[in-house]
Image 1 (cartoon, rainbow, N blue to C red):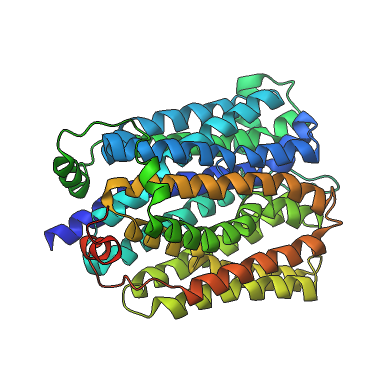
Image 2: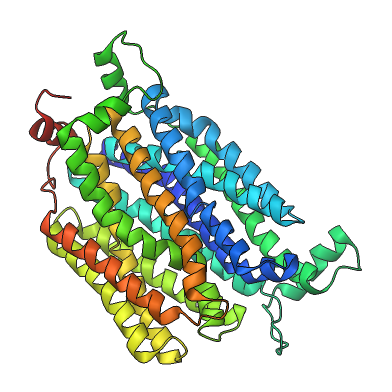
Length: 455
């Protein structure tokens, strides 16, 4: 019982990394139009912000570094310092007065997110009991839903009035205007005043990151990592010395291809929705910033509830059919938005509901679980770092292309939607056909079955 409580406690502490990952993406998304108006950004600028953020390349760079560091120096080493980097990035965004400064803040924040992700999924898996691995990964994914929900609620409450409307978030006047005037003087107005609401949203992430740093740096080191280091003895090697093993072992290559097949195709869709959903709702859908945020809040509440049920059943049911259900709902969501229409409130409502359900039983949840199970402890975090680098790096390139397919006002939304459907279908087929049989087995047992003594 004590071990179960211990694994749950450490899972909650580590899960704050997921809160801050998704929180950074959605904080950028919810204020994207505000920053665009304030700094006079083009669609190309928005594409670059997405490309180097926690949504894509920034996280990709951080993941490949953090994965190898976690295997070389331990999972605890990441938790001791990484949140300091995150706070630096968020502070840059909060204080941004031009595009290069904003871009740098997004990049630094993204790198920190990437550094923390492989270590967090690995740590959770290694510290979980056999029957609770999926549950704990599910709990960590709930944090991935709670973060955006809180951020979007803040964004809605702090939202400035939109053009042609006097409506604003209930806290815009008493909080945003008051603080902006106190800090910048009574002359602040227009887009400079409006974007202050986004600065405050990022300030909330800074506070959570500080709390996460205080909790995570007190965590014990992974017992499995210490055992693996003891087994290796006095063997020396560079931080990236396991690169050779990763790309020469046939089992590793097959695993990487499988995980890339399910996660990359899904993430190309999810990364766009994570960063551009409010922008799409406002441009192609014709909603105000406040209403776009409100609809997204509802979706994230659905995600949290669905993820909770996922965490309760994933260790007990056939994972093949659970995976099929989750991705199948994603395909259905895009079919509905294309057939009913993105500029229809009914279409947006149905899409919000069904896309929220698929995100609760998401490919990312299965990826986090399977990636931590299918690789041995020797380079478990490094392998996930490589995978995350590939996925987020390609997503960065896709984000740059998406803005031109989509167009300034959503003219190309239908074409983009059909591409999304195709990507999700690929993920659906690969994951359903080649679901790994790991449920109910220890990590050591899985490693022995897959690798034998050839590690």
